[in-house]
Image 1 (tube, rainbow, N blue to C red):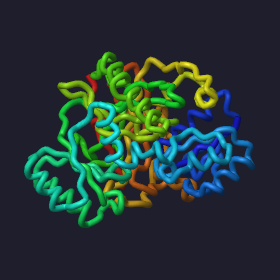
Image 2 (cartoon, rainbow, N blue to C red; image 1 turned 90 degrees about the horizontal axis):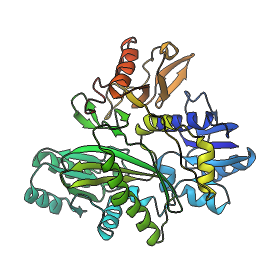
Image 3 (cartoon, helix red, strand yellow; image 1 turned 135 degrees about the vertical axis):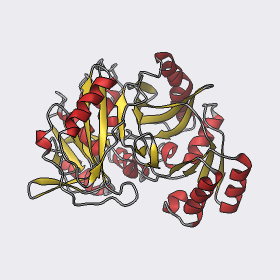
Image 4 (cartoon, rainbow, N blue to C red; image 1 turned 45 degrees about the horizontal axis):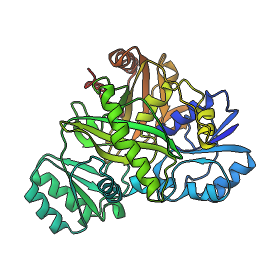
Length: 415
């Protein structure tokens, strides 16, 4: 079959590569894709131009469309495709609210007793600041809507939290996404990501992963979309994974079905293992980035066939490799606030025994240059996290990266 992947980042490159390796898939298209997606034929169509995408699907005999990023999902692409009778893997506009509105997600969790941090919702800065001063710090301030993974401030002091409130509600740092904010209690513990394939009540969990959000070594600096990730997460026991499935993921899927918004797609649960068990930090309605690049390559089963059978109501249990993968993000200097574009990347073909996923790159005069904040993710497999990390950092250390930076401690929490 022919497959279309919608999106342009590193996550979508990993999805494209997995489909391209599937025996059931004849050809992979990407819209709009990026210059590094050699495994796909690209279509110069915006992720949110739904009529043009639907025409492309019909003209190229595409059997399955897979949605990568949150923006087209939030705009209702799955609804549009379903109304056109086109097979698409992604949640409806109503169901994607579990990501696009943190208030909606919190209220859903409250109604269905899904464990999460205590919270309050505000649209008025004065009221929010008064609440923060009563609660004290550390405390978490979140933009209610989508903010490309950057709308979450873990404030160590009341002063930091007040600044975050003012930036969101008064300065409109995140536009309409920050016109309402959620203030949460700070939860302490080990974070992990639990992603699942979901359709018609069927849930197929993936191996656990953990990403590193802070820009710099030692988990310092501003929050980013993610500076690296690894899979599996050896410090999270399998019993906790099972508990998370039964107390968080399955109840969330059932709750959405009960409320008339059944979920199809990738349900991402970002969690923290507290002294009271796993609690939800956030839900996303699509693959995480950079988690996808370290989780999806562990899938042994035919990816195209699995998604096709899942949508057809004939799912099968996927097989996973028994190894570890660790990936490190190469970011442009100045990321996340003001990334510098145009710096030349080293010859990526010289990087042997690692997988390179393109995100913010552009080909110019037969060389790749940086064209975004997060530019590449470089990953390697190993028998364990430490071995995978050694492989990646050895490969990175052989190249010069002027104009770019990366963390040197991805995977440090793995025991």
